[in-house]
Amino acid sequence: MKNISNIICLLTAVATAVWGYMSKGQYYALAIVVFWVLLFYLISIKLKLSGLIQTVVYLSIASIIAILSYSSQSEEQNINTNNNEASDISTETIENEKDSDYYNDLLQKYTIEKKAYDGTLKNGGENSYAADKQDESDLVLNDHLAAIEYTIISEISGEYQLTFKIKPKTNKSQDSEDVSVVVNGQNSFTLSIPSQSEEEWLWTEPANISLGEGKNLIEIVKISDSNTAVEIDELKLIPIIKEPS
Image (cartoon, rainbow, N blue to C red; front, top):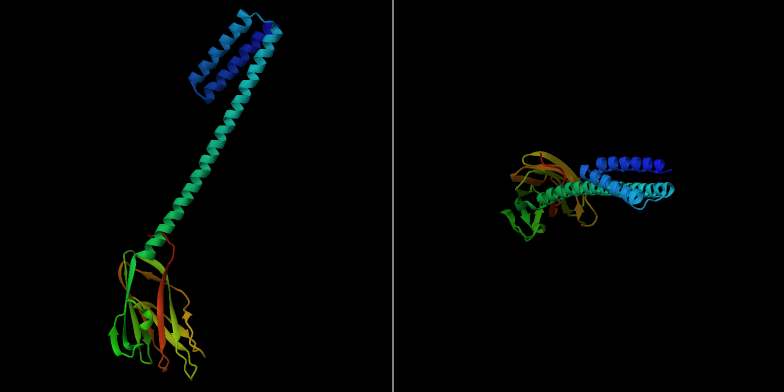
């Protein structure tokens, strides 16, 4: 029986030493070998336990080592999984922050100046070529070929959605009002604003435009020849999230 217990001790010692070397390195394997040598000396030589007891002790210790090994590997896998998930979340967060930063750059890094020409102001001035940088609602497109010019000074180039708020004055003919928007002398598009029974503010449908770095001109021109004025209250530029080229 002692021969069997000795063989079991040898096999478990070799198996655990190999596991220690593969998972932890050579020093860990060496420590396991030393442990089994001391255990064999204590149980077999010093205490001189019977072969059956030795076998039970060796198998019990081998089982404990196997359980500890499995628990250690499971914990490492969980740590690696958590680290990978954290890395994915971190990467996604960085991408979102990049998008957010780019959006904020577009949102903040431009200034708007404006002036009306060949038109009138609400206070009754005529043929004015004036700038009111505080209150855009002072600007009215009259029944002539009037226009409002916006100068956009942008620190970076980017894509925007352009929309502005208008209020057509009521007229008897119920004709629609055509308003043309010209961006940097091109990319012009025309909006037809139906006349209304009551004066009411309307937001125009957003239109995609590109603004370059530096000075950009946006002209809003009333091109219909009716006697209905169109009041411009506010112009908005909504950044489109897009990585800069």
